[in-house]
Length: 285
Image (cartoon, rainbow, N blue to C red; front, side, top):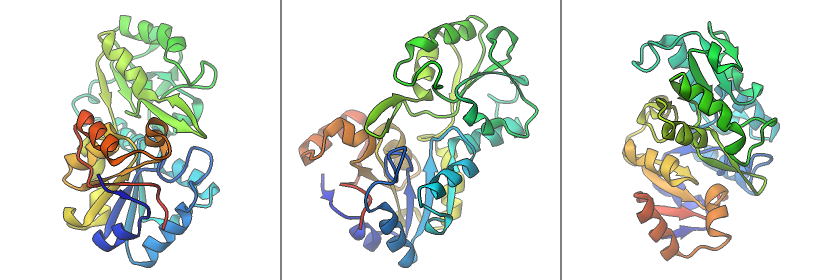
């Protein structure tokens, strides 16, 4: 697999970019070196850029966080989050999984994620016995963010009542300032193992790419998706027929270290069943 040192060659090949946020643009606390400059260069060349994240929150909250890091709205054409898609599905109730859900959510996750149900007729409870479904947005600070174990009593209580689970972030893990932390997808895995019914909203599901592709308004052959996670970012790109670029930051950086060989990348891609057209050392110019 070819490893690119710069995003400049990609700008020669593609007109539109779907960029993961956490693990590509920033490490959870600050942008990776060179990211603001790379985005400005892409915009200066007339490239269209949409950010696609499995963040379990509304897009506006992610936009505010990015602006606080110096990544303002002038650097991209739009933001799509799994939380935004989940909010729409919970509002409309037309999807067959969402149509029968009740209005009382057993929330597993931090309060900061509750934008995913803002302005909706949904009441939040911390008691599985009083709930109609599980709203899984990921780990909270009270129970910790490194292991599923502290959450098992909650998951088991919900599974015993056969509550359906809405998982608003299919990621299993994320890197935050060099530390590997679990995400909502880790709970979804365990809940499935307990016999629970789960729907995961986010990459790699093609549904979350609909707004992205409409915003870009370009032929698929002129679009590239850049992400650090094979089973979400890279698989999702393949599912909608656009080229995938494997960013070697974020989870990939944690897995491979600072200088992976092309052979190691090829072997891991084969194990994951994905075929990125190239790897990118980091999003810099």
